[in-house]
Length: 252
Image (spheres, rainbow, N blue to C red):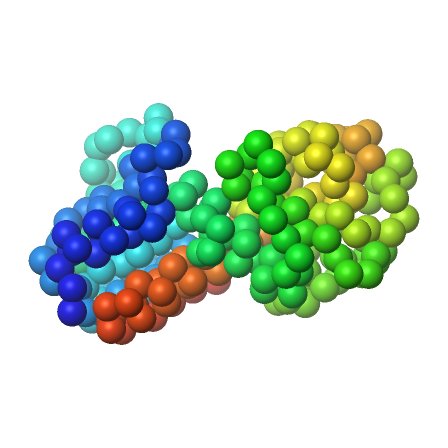
């Protein structure tokens, strides 16, 4: 068991949220009970994940997508009000780390996703503060083969946009999980054969084709499942806590 104060102190020391200009507060977002033994994990603090954490008997819920986003109404009404009410009624702490969890060199969504694919020859792209990661494949593969491997490992169908200007074989892949499709320009500037993120916009297809970079949209939720599990596992081991990941199966 660990105090919430010590838990947040440790997480902040590992994640260094002060180094990021983020879109939401990092750390403790909703305060609950003072001691933590059971740590629930999730990608997003949705009602389904909150309910599952409460049923499991969690003392804290650690997520990548928490609350109180920039330009979001501060009013606790409607859906957000119901979520916060459930957290407070259960005395359940809500802890969120956004960009620090994307970029971390050990627990980050980017590096953990690359390892999940078996692409272990990887490193952060210089000048991007860990927001973009580069993987170099041992053997060049077709864009179709890479897309199929991604789909198989994530257990969901990915969307491949091929560029006629792009290479026929892919070896240099740049990744940024979540909703980072607009970083395709950075990926192209850094020499990517293929760029992978979670989402796709209407403009992304044209950008990929014209920039000469193949693009894979692999799912926002699907690409961000692994960082929070790695972080949760590490903190649970460090303080002998019980941890459990709850996946609400978001297809987006």
